[in-house]
Image 1: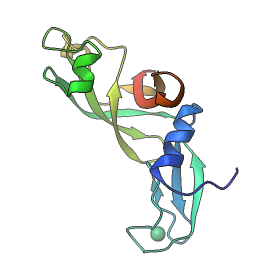
Image 2 (image 1 turned 90 degrees about the horizontal axis):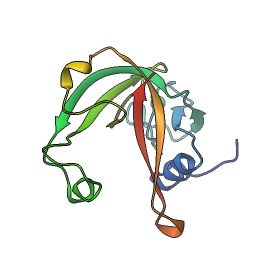
Image 3 (image 1 turned 120 degrees about the vertical axis):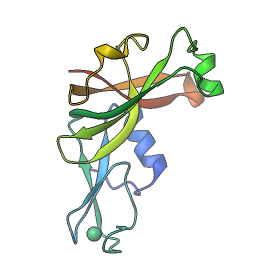
Amino acid sequence: MEQRPFSDTSYQQFLNEDMLMGSKCQKCGVLYAPPRQICPKCKATTMQWIQLMGKGKLVAFTCIAVGTAAMIKEGYDRKRPYISGVVELDEGVKMAARIEDIDGTKPEAIKVGMPLTVKFLHCGEGENQKTFLAFKPA
Ligand SMILES: [Zn+2]
């Protein structure tokens, strides 16, 4: 694995390449995703990139009917809410992400504990391209 700095920019670059990456503290072994440069637990700065499998389970969720301007632009509103969730990965890290491929108007279809798998949402073109982390039912 090439050595990129443990920054949000690198994390975003990896997402653009369909890779979900975290950083693992070489001293105490705690895994962080998104990556951290300095371990908040033991203050060590020796990190290592770890590729996450992108599989996990839903631990919490919210259906958002009134979203941010960016989400409204994408066509989400009261009639088409989107789901924001917290996913616990098999590696033990909890990540906040959008939950896709579930009808936001039918929250009863969403179950805490349901297995999820990563989905890379590529938006925009060229320099404006950005990849959002999302999960969908496994
Ligand atoms: Zn540490």
